[in-house]
Length: 304
Image (cartoon, rainbow, N blue to C red; front, side):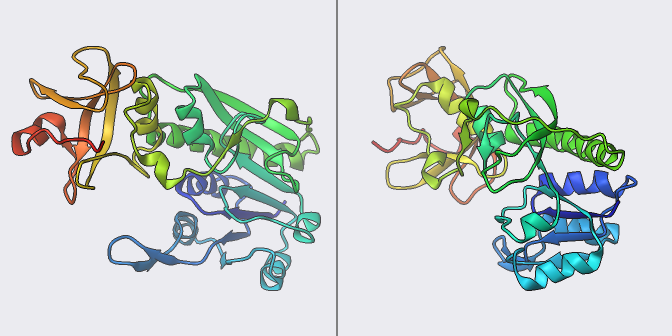
């Protein structure tokens, strides 16, 4: 069986490594073009492109996988199965009709269809999540399911640790799905659309910690956005105090919307309880503990 792999992110790069180490080493890897990243704005490959080149896999960079050039590249590879993981492009006909596409999705479908399933699961306070292998269709993550594996979302777990674990699970499931398909034993069951929830893309304003919300909700936002996006507290004067790690507390919480310091602790008063800011990032600075921050800064005033 000859597998084409379509992916972009760090998560997808881990899944690619699993496939490359298996009997289903991809014959072609499709990923978006290099783009400018970081402060230096230098062109950098996607994590999948970097992994594929390290592994010696042929890479086709495409800003539109449905273009004639990409269709030709896939055809010339001789692939007879396509595996998709965190790719970020909409796959349309005729490409969708030409190959069977299996999607490695980091949620327990039909819960959290869409762009940000890991973040939304943490934000919602879900106790469990997982990875699903499904057949790609024209709908948004609505195709029939072949395989799924659950994992617990541990108390205090953030995006970084959960995504890493889900990527390992996804890699194992991707190899298993290929093996079952090659043996003619990969079966599917339809999703229950009535149970579907949607993981919308994280919008910029969702990074802002609003003290009018309960502290428990804000803690989940901080965990869901760490370390890849980051939450922040807006300060008077328009500056932002990055919040890298935080926890809800009922001990010593000041009035809603105020920050208080006590014995090296920095606590934001919320609608319910307080949010203790354990690790923060001052404007233009680096991550520091609250105690270290308070040794060099006065207690800041949140924006009204």
